[in-house]
Image (cartoon, rainbow, N blue to C red; front, side):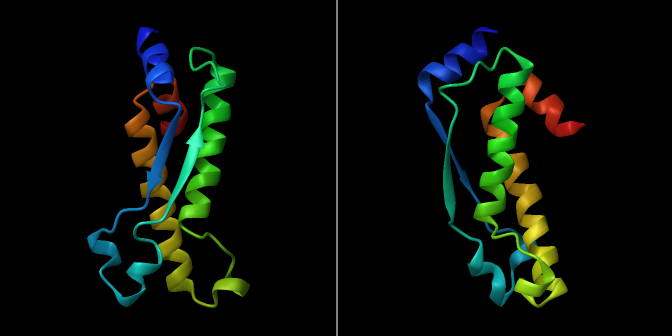
Length: 110
C-alpha cells in the first residue's frame, strides 16, 4: 500500500474538527464547533489490520472528546445527548474519509 506509506510519511497527525452542520443550527451548536483533537498515527503500520484497528480506536476516542460525549446524568437532556451522538458519528466519518485508507474505511463501514 503505497498510499498508506505516503500518508504516514507526510502526515504524522490528523486533526479532527467538529464542523457545524444544519443539524446544529441551534443555540447549542457552538458547544461543538471548532473543537479539535490531534491524533498521531506515525507509530502505526497502516498496512496491517492491527495498526488500522488501533488508529480507529484513537479516532473514536478523539471524536468522543471533540463532541464531549457524556451520559444523561451529566448532560441532563436527551436532546444534548442526541446532538453529541450526531457530532460523534459525523466527526468520526470525516476523519476516516480524510485519512483515506481502504482498511480503515472497511472497519468504519462494518
